[in-house]
Amino acid sequence: MEKPEAVLIDGEPVAAEEASVSVLERGFHYGDGLFETIACEAGRPRLLERHLQRLRGGCERLGLAVPTPAVLEEELAGIAHGTSRAIVKLFLTRGSAVMRGYGLTGRERPTRVALRYPWPGLDESAQEQGIRVRLASLRLGENPALAGIKHCNRLEQVLARREWTDPKIAEALLFSSSGALVSGIASNVFLVCDSKLVTPLLDRCGVAGVMRGLVLDIAAAAGLCAQERRLDAADLEQADELFLTNALTGIRPVRELEGAQRPAGPLTRQLQRELAAHLAMRGAEAGRG
Amino acid sequence: MEKPEAVLIDGEPVAAEEASVSVLERGFHYGDGLFETIACEAGRPRLLERHLQRLRGGCERLGLAVPTPAVLEEELAGIAHGTSRAIVKLFLTRGSAVMRGYGLTGRERPTRVALRYPWPGLDESAQEQGIRVRLASLRLGENPALAGIKHCNRLEQVLARREWTDPKIAEALLFSSSGALVSGIASNVFLVCDSKLVTPLLDRCGVAGVMRGLVLDIAAAAGLCAQERRLDAADLEQADELFLTNALTGIRPVRELEGAQRPAGPLTRQLQRELAAHLAMRGAEAGRG
Image 1 (cartoon, each protein chain N blue to C red):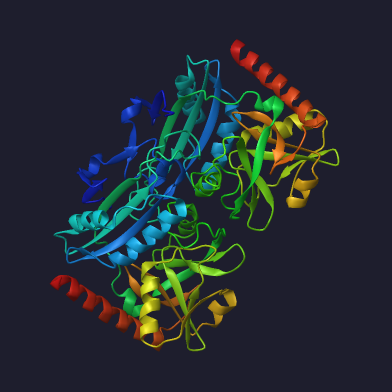
Image 2 (tube, each protein chain N blue to C red; image 1 turned 60 degrees about the vertical axis):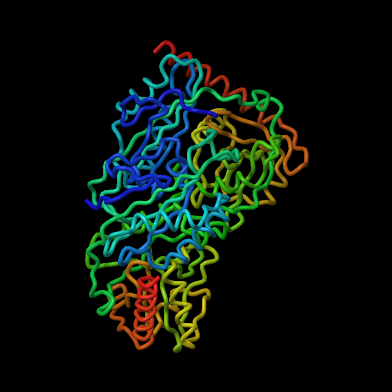
C-alpha cells in the first residue's frame, strides 16, 4: 500500500488516515478540479514554477480562483521539508457544492489537498536502458476546452491502464479519436524524425507535462529544432528515436514498442545529459537560495 | 444552499455535515466512478430498475464490482422512506487508492454514497409551457469507451453550464467534436422529423438517460416509429417538434431555441400523456406492492 506520509487540507496538517473531503465535494461528484504531481528533492519541490504555471492555466480554463502563489509555495515547501526525495500530489478542486447539479453559484470555495508520498521504487535503470511500451486500444476524446491542462477527469487514463497487466510493459501510447498521436498514459512523447525533435500538439487533448515543457526549452537552448505538430501512426513507425517524459522519471527512451526494438539514439542521449545538467544546476541554486 | 437531508456511506447513516470520503478516494482523484440521480415519490425511488441497470452497465465498462441489487434496493428504499418527494444521488466509485497513479491492484474496494436532497423548486409549468434552450459552444469529446454511461468525469458539463447565467434559459444543447447533436447538459433530446420520433445515437458520447429509455419504450408500445440515429444541426433546425427528457423533469417541450419559437406539437403532447399514465400506473402498483 502506498499511503501518504503527510497531508495538508487547505494548508492545515491532518493525520493521513483521517484525511477526508466532504461528500459534497465537486471534485468527488464531477472530477471538477486540477492536480499536479511534483517531485521533491532535498526537501524542495522540483520545477515548482512550471507546476504552478500549469495549475494557474488550469484555473483560468475551469474558472477556478487562482490561489496566491506565495500560499501554495509555502505549503509545498512545508510539506516537502525534511525529506530527501518525495512526491507531492497537489489537488485544487471546486470545493463543496453549494447547489445540486452542474451549475455554479459563484460562492463555491476551492479545496486544496496536498499529499506527500515516499519516493517510489522506480526502475532507475529505465533512463539508461529504456522501457517497453505498447499501443493503447482506447482512443482519447478530443476537446480543446480541456486539452493541455491537468484536470481530474482521468477515466480515459484509468481505462487505458487497465488494458495490460504485464509488469515488464511500463507505458502505453495513446492516439486520439481522429487518429493523432497524443501521449503516454502518464507521460508525454517525443520523436526524432529526419534528425528533428518533434512532439504532438496538445491543442485537442492530452496533458502538457512540465517535463515536456522543460525538454522543449532545453532543446531550444541547445539549438535543436524542436517542434510541436500533428503526428500520427506513420510518424511513430518511421521515427528514428522515441522517448517519453514525465516530471518524476525525466526522459526515458523507448527501447521496445509493441515488441519491436527501438534503440535509443544520439539526440535522446544528448537531451538526457542536458536535462541532468540543468536539474543539477537548478538543485544547486535552490540549495544556496 | 441545497444540502442533503440524509447520507449513507457504504450503507451506514452518517450525519450530513460530517459525511466525507478519504482524500485517497479515486472518485476524488480521477472522477473514477459512476452516479445516478433518482426521483423518489411517496417514499419510493422511481424507475429504480432502469437506474440500477444503467449503473450495472457502467460497472462493467469501468471494471467496477457490481453491487448486489438487493443491497442497493434496500439502501435506496431506506433513504427514500418517509419522504413524499425527494431526490437521491447515488455514487459508486472505485474507492480509496491502493497505490499512487492510474493503475489498479484488484484490491480496491468500491465506495457507495447515497445523498437524499429535498425535492427542488422545479418550474412545474415547464412540462406544459416548455422551456427556453440555447446551443452550447463547447463540443463534447467522442469516446465510445465512456459513451452512454453516467460516469463522474463531468467537466464538459460543468464548463458548458458556465456559458450562460440568464435564469430564463433552462438548458443548452450540445454537439460533439464531429458535429453530431448529442444531448442537453443534463437531459436527452428528442426531435420529430417528418412525423418520426428520433433521438441521437449515444455510441460516441452522451449519457443514455433513464427517461430517454422509458420514452423510447413508451413510444414503441404506442406504435410510434422511434429511432436512434446520427443527427446534426440541420436535423435540429428542420425538426417539427423538439423536447428534452430527464429522470426528474420528465418530458419538457422546447418552446424557444436560441431565441426562435418552437411550439410543442402533437407527438410531444401524446408522449407526455402516455408517460404520465405510465408513471401513475407504476406508482399505484408500487403502492399496492
